[in-house]
Length: 544
Image (cartoon, rainbow, N blue to C red; front, top):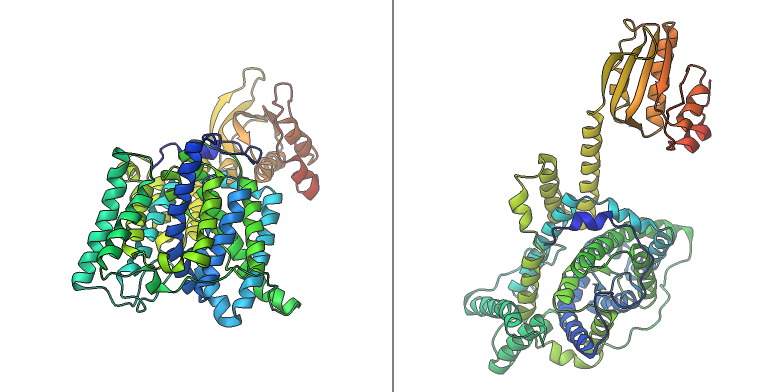
């Protein structure tokens, strides 16, 4: 897995990129590669979309329509050429309760509202906050994702019609056995071997497509008894038709769908933006977060009005596309159009493809997605970082990707705050300019986490009449820090002593002097700004 993910998070979000990927020129060779890569992705999308439709409790065509429409709109408008979007399991597990309780029409209305919320997030440029995801969280995310993709393929090793499909894998089904199982495993191994070996011979044909073609050819030619795409469900259908969700336009309906829409919008954006970063790291691209948010929102609005279950970026299929050579928007567009053609014209042929071929492709995605280097660095990185990697991986597998990322960011932020809170110290010395004055040289950041420790640094009863607090090696970060400074000043005033502040920002001087406690020396103070608006607006430091 990429070793420079940390650098990608530090990159400033640039203007939306509406052009072809800067890493790929639109040449005949690249167009051919993108078309073949799109075909590979489309073949892999079919069983995924059907399975996720089963998870959500809707007809398979609802999942296939979502894969087509979300994939097409995001391919054209998205923030990263090369990304693939469609119906996903993380969204499906949230939808199932809504569908079970209120019906599929409420799902369509929810998907529309979900899209509106995502467009708002994009317009507000909230996507840039994905830069705050720490590197250990990203490592845990990709590791957990690889495990989830692996577990999801286990349903294909069960007798069709007996598996109880879940968001993360198989449960309750009857496993294949005997010759059928051995044949399935052999075909999976053959597909993986072709994908591994073919790039060493030629890159004319994407290796995953070649693996699917060879394996499918053998199964069809020899009529091997293994599960096929058609055993899951028929994918034959017509064009998606415009359809206004048949729900009452009342406040009660809004109250029902809003909580689901908020959760789905958040999960969809988190997964899409993490995929944006991952694909960008692999292809040397940057920026486009806000554009991706708006593209995801637009795709879900369209999908909701055309009978689809909604979706977001699909990391597994995006990896297939990128590793097959797909670098421009053509690959995503072609994948969506191929998927639609399967539904309209080629369903009998597509339903003959063995699931073993598609499982082999996804197993290779698992191997390529897992951050194997994270296993080597676990003993070298700080223990809290190692803990975050494991935590995010486990939560990803047990819950879902979005919850895991949020948990990882919170734990990382708390750990960072605690580490900085313990760094606040003071060095005491006599003043060189004022006889009899005591100087406290503050070291470390002063913020909400270290405010209490700051107030404990001073020996007010024993200090002389004049005390100088020097912030040259510190940084006042927030209103809690200003409040802590004022509290210390008030204690010195109550003891009848004078306090001076050195190397404190001028805006802090203005707020603190309004309290009436401080005598400050501002000749050598810096100009950085700290919490001016907040302090003045609230009046907390504006006087008594």
